[in-house]
Amino acid sequence: MAEEGFPDLFEQVRPALSNKTDEFVFYGYGSVTEEDLWSYCLGKLWRKKDLHELPVHEAVGDILSISPTRYMSHTQVEGFKKAAGNSSFGGLDEEEFRELLAPKGRKGDRQTAQRLN
Image 1: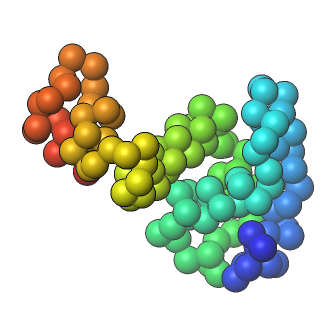
Image 2: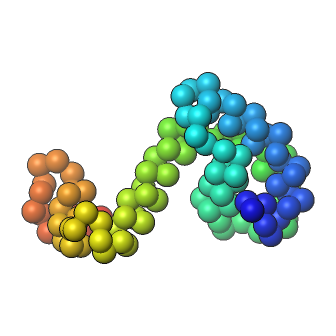
Image 3: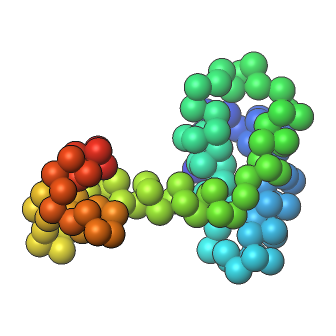
């Protein structure tokens, strides 16, 4: 379950998570759940913070400041990282996968492909 490790904080900020998921639905991102946003906060926003010391008002502020664009960009990048780690991604080897993700006009540019790491 998403609140493992910090159930008190999760319950305290749950109304903010609910409000933010409602906002995402309004903007057409209906598949985002409270647990997804919680995981995003833990893994991205608060990864370097001591959650035992995080004030509730700061956590709520962080949650309410999440933009759909920022969240979806993060989700997409994480998906690419997982796919890159999966050696069976469409039958592509690592070099082919890097070339696929290289910026337009730079295919085959080894330095660009290496910077994608």
